[in-house]
Length: 364
Image (cartoon, rainbow, N blue to C red; front, side):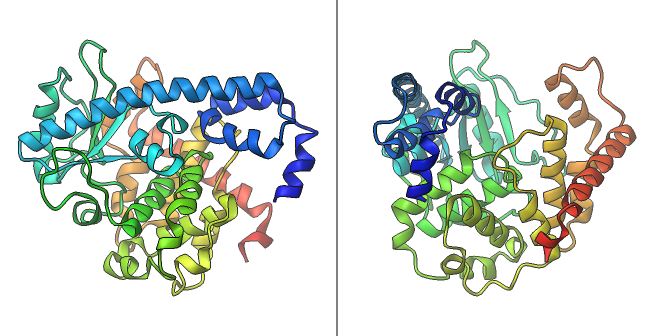
């Protein structure tokens, strides 16, 4: 793509590009590579903006790293193994610079059986009690969100899983087998790569942040992985049979991952999987409501067999407490009724389907 990039350099509106990347939290991630590709033709203002964003991200990333390591050490003292997900630790590993991957919060994974203990440990750092809805079994849908009561520390999300479709993978493959108070544990490369693919799918393949992470990760670690590296994982966790191959296919289209090498024995994508690939949106311009609906629609297309009821509860008819939280997040005076919200979601699913049908040849 080098020759095409060189041609595009002459047409770039550098101020607009800088602002677009900044709004999408991509300026320090993609900016350095764009400056490199431009070979001296990037505007001085653009190059300066990239350097400033990277330096700022580096300072904030160092702060997040310190808080993450402190939290991991405190959890270890309480006998709770944990591991940081994404964030500046990943940024340093794949971009060689924590400032290249801006983050605003800290994501930590713990065992579901120790999630409540982890909450109490974090409260010892001054965090308030989580308000997330708790489902049967005493667990939130994905994580508990904790906000520091004095606003001095970044929000912390305590995860017990990384995707809707799993209850074992994160615990079995991503957590350290023993308590690691130094925070130096990293999962096996294939498992870490699978987790990034699951993050990308869970967020509905929207934008370029997670796609960029996948491309950067592959540049650093891809040569260490054998062909068909995810075949064993797909056999062990059959709930991933649709979602992982689709995530790989989307990542091939967006950032050039070699799909055939990664999932060599995966069957050819069916109609539902091809629809999900088509809904991937690296350059989102839809309304926020439609984007969230597209993400939910992708969930419905890729859900495992027997998961329909759970899909309806998390995407179409969530509990009233979840609707209230969504209303507060959107600054609405009151939440919509479950029926009204469900009808609106289904209407947006219909719009997503209509958009797909405008180019049916791409689904063959």
